[in-house]
Image (cartoon, rainbow, N blue to C red; front, top):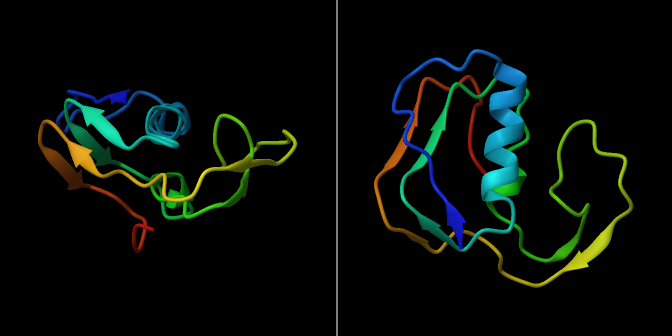
Length: 97
């Protein structure tokens, strides 16, 4: 279970910290208590943190700048339930994993 966000379409003050916040919130999350908002992601954003189908990932998430050792994760850690709304808008990424 993880906490959702309530920023709607507010522009983040720092795009890099916004991405890291989203990655931290949703990595390995199956149930979002609140809203799932994916906004203002840059074109090179790695969205693999939204869906992990097993294998290895660094603790705390997989993403740019992570030099942590790889550790096994359980199968099927993708998001299964959102208890609020889902907002996907104003992104530069070509797709979500």
